[in-house]
Figure 1 (spheres, rainbow, N blue to C red):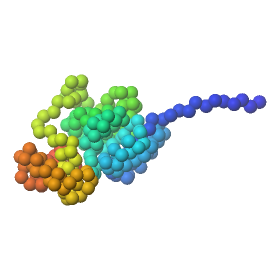
Figure 2 (figure 1 turned 90 degrees about the vertical axis):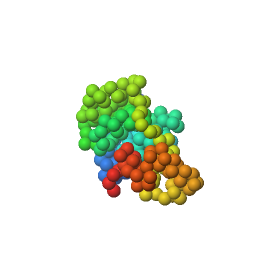
Figure 3 (figure 1 turned 180 degrees about the vertical axis):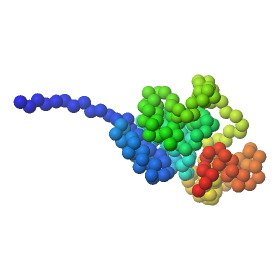
Figure 4 (figure 1 turned 135 degrees about the vertical axis):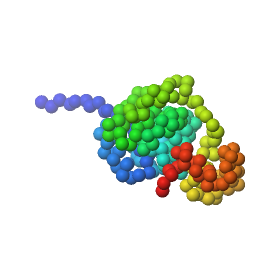
Length: 224
């Protein structure tokens, strides 16, 4: 006697991976594919924005240091666009200041790469549940205080606009004003205006000084 059984389809959470190192992406696939639906992978922050819109993932697992647009500024742009996607950063930066900036940009998780095998799956589930996860090695009293409601948006010093940060990252990556204009759909003159306004606001005199500012603030890597 054959009895038909109704099957309940279980929909796994949809995950988009964003990292410019292919070896890392392959490792993440092996780590996550059993628990999640991996809908795609990208290697820079601008394509990440496009694929969030196209693929509608539940969570993005992203590196901070990515070309064309770093992960933190990509997260800011997603929040400014009204996107509700959860963002979990997977990074090599064991620095509370980076984690704080990630939270200010709207991230739900901050996991160190060397802890990925132990913590990333948990961090994704915490993000899906509406909670914030930070790697255990970074959970100092100061970090806990910075993540409490009412303190996550405290900023200090000069704040560049989103557009200025986009221009600065591309300058730091060695792009010319003409190349930046094409990427951002601006005129070269507008790019130069942003550049000189940043130099004036930051009190620096050369493009090299701007590049050093970008490196110090984690917008690009200090090594190539």
